[in-house]
Length: 146
Length: 146
DNA sequence: CTGCATCCTAAGTGATACTG
DNA sequence: CAGTATCACTTAGGATGCAG
Image 1 (cartoon, helix red, strand yellow):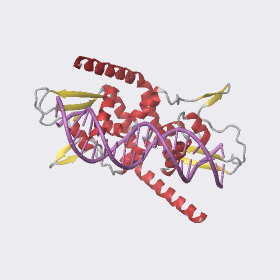
Image 2: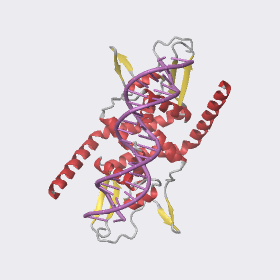
Image 3: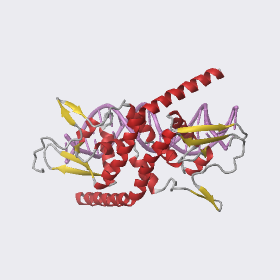
Image 4: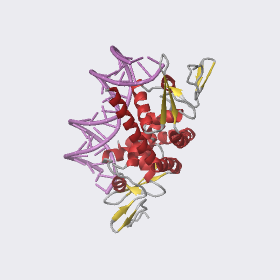
């Protein structure tokens, strides 16, 4: 296959009457893409991963998610609430108390995200090794080139 | 539970000798967090989702992923290659031809990400509805407040 | 405690031009 | 074709102060 015959490479999608057919809607303005951008967000991911069949207060979440600012946590929770993934409960007491918990919809997403986190935990060693190998290879090549 | 007794809310983690124990390492400098940020990246997600048991050329990927710039695609592929998720093959022909495909490691991640994409596709209606409801509620509240 | 508004910096991103 | 380099711009994100 390395001989120069590159007629039709293994393509994920396929071409039909000169029109590309893909396995999924990849348009930038596609709804799925937008939602994906939202839930694949750095902070959203962590919040959903943390909110597993339990409710947490604003400050608790902030303490658990090291490095998140008040601003980003508030904004992230707003977005998740708007998307119907997180339920926000305000208790009329002083000082104010607000609990956050996953909605049924959010719980469904949780298991998927949890799988992503688990995968990462299980393979972080391989990724770290790959990075080291890559960096070494690049260094060796620039060495040879110089 | 709405009566003001908020001794110990449903907490995801738990406290042991005054030391918080969480279900996962949430430190900002944690390896898993960094990897998660990388693979949960907007473009990385799409590239991995697209590269399913098939190889694609640079331009093919660019065409499939609507809205991605040459710069971002190149950078994303670099990162994925460095992380050992994507294999880059350069064919010594003119004009140059470079194929990208998932490594076994990347293939494992693919199934997880695919689940995320599938979930999004299946629930985009509910999310859209939640957003509409939320916006309507907010509008009504600001109406009442005014 | 919760969370919004403001300001400001750093990082991400796109457009363009250029190289192997 | 497959990139890299540069520049200009937009956005994300942190710090701070204040309100409910």
